[in-house]
Image (cartoon, rainbow, N blue to C red; front, top):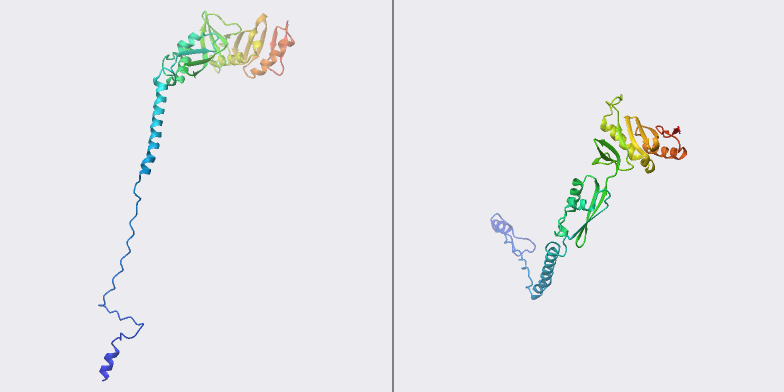
Length: 284
């Protein structure tokens, strides 16, 4: 009886609630629950609405293409916007015909295709007297050229001719006759102690600086600019008068001082503005 009691204790009773059955090494695992499948994505069927909306878009694109093509044809292919007339203004010594010949604008070409920068470069290269040129399109058929000529402030005698020099020191033309109101350079600095330090080009620069700074009334009376050295520049005026200028430094102040002296002592024959704060006049 004792053995039977022991056997009954070791056997789990299925009638006891709340106690799970004993899991031994050989007990099977419960099967996993299958994952719920995701519902298939529903796509709305294509209706006639989307296809109908494509019509206006395609029509707009076609219209844009036609507009671009038509505009390109008007600018490049038609005869409506082509170069028919070229004008030149601003000339003084030169003639408009000389400027037009140098510009060589392609008459008959589409106006939009004309390279205005190239035209300006041609004019400056072929006519050194031109200081600046502005080429602009004058729609629908024209090209306008506005030029500014260089103005000589000094002349360099060369054989029987005269080389014109502007205020920037550019030698831009050679003429057979000296223009009125432009002084002639006389450079004689060979015996100067400063000749080695200040070469001919440097002295020419100083002479141009002086001539370019002269007030207009004084410039019209100046016949010659004599350069003996860097700090020995003398102006020869009409009527045999002379002006000791000194160097090219403070030329603007010296020009104002000389203008005042000419008014204060109109009968004087010699003027000194080498020190512009203490100008002097002498002789008659």
